[in-house]
Length: 256
Length: 256
DNA sequence: ATCATAGTCGTCTTCCTGACGATAAACACC
DNA sequence: GGTGTTTATCGTCAGGAAGACGACTATGAT
Image (cartoon, rainbow over all chains, first blue to last red; front, side, top):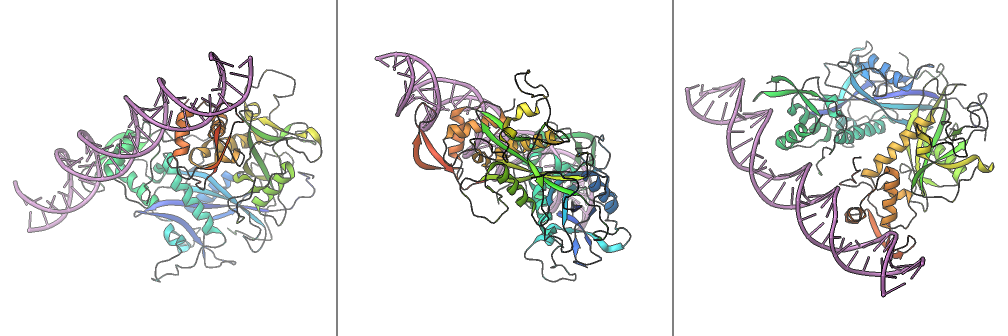
């Protein structure tokens, strides 16, 4: 046993992959890019890239995020003060099956990003090489019947598993943290927040009980003073995310 | 942007580090090994080692675990059926700060192992180069007053942070899962399980409410028929871990 | 016999949630 | 202007779960 012998260690390629989630039109969506080269040419994949020689893992993920979406993420582990419209970024898990990339040994550190609804993904320059796709469509064993696109093709590499893990992390984390606000614009209504929960969990929630719960949890929401009527109906009070990050007691996800 | 160019990628060393936790004498303890070579020579560190060229990350962690402790872990992600006395193993997080190893760029995939109380750690051959140390002692900013050992020296590399993350994962995970049984022998009493919670959380729990909670949660415990008096006092019923893995509603960790 | 120890069963109060009625404030349409 | 629709917000009530704690049981130690 000779740990850390600098002269003889097996070399690995290390990458970061991004599970970027948002809520669009009442559906949980993930950012995917089309692969331009083999393997899996033409298939959809999660955005990602190599970690640079002197770059931390979280920094690599944030850099890739800017390159793919223009979003400025703030990693909670970083010492940066709270930025303006940044998205939430956290490490998800690491995938290192020797067979996961047919060309060479690649260990990928997946990160999870929760972002508010964005106008449109910007690819590196190729126009429609990136898009938001509903996660149900990307993951469902039973894809929708052939419509116009090439939907049924699964994601490249082991990205379906990575995406599934990211979605499950998001679903469970909004239970006991205030992270659902990361899907919302800086100011939002209780109804908009409820629609985030409904989209991420895929359930319907009682508006009255939800309102009581979120407004009754100290530090979750702080009123910003204004109101809005952008959803139609009676004007709703606008809130910002409060300082609390952990919800106690947590939001309860309905059984079925 | 040229992702996955096989001819030009920065090479990294990839290792696994293990946070092996157990409960000994009513204290949460971690397995640490003494480093025999620089850097950090003579300091305590988490066990770990290089991932082999054709080895999955979880397999590397399981292999290191056997080498260090003789424990047979069963990764829930693996297709193995439930083994006998195996410990619980799961991936924790990945640490890749460019400065974390002064010699070269090392990315370490940390894993968390929860094991029942073991007789004694077996080192590779060097007798007292491995030991169980209370995590409070390893992590406390305020170490105990100098007793006989060389306690105040912190763990090597960034292992204090890795250990802290592992402990926090264990503390939160026994709230909503049945994982606390991984700290117990195959058959155990409600009181022994309660002492696990008390040691991991560092709190005192009401024996009556705890008993009501764990015996009232379907699938958490199944009686094995026997009783024991190894704790003194009235004989206690023996249980095994039931099939349930998620506790709903969760165990509640007291505030202070 | 008495005590100490640990386990097990109940009770009571309080808090939280789910179900759901009712009211309020906007807009669309006739 | 009236009416209906939509969404937001407040209230009420019943059931379940948890904390506090009393009471009883079954063993070993003295």
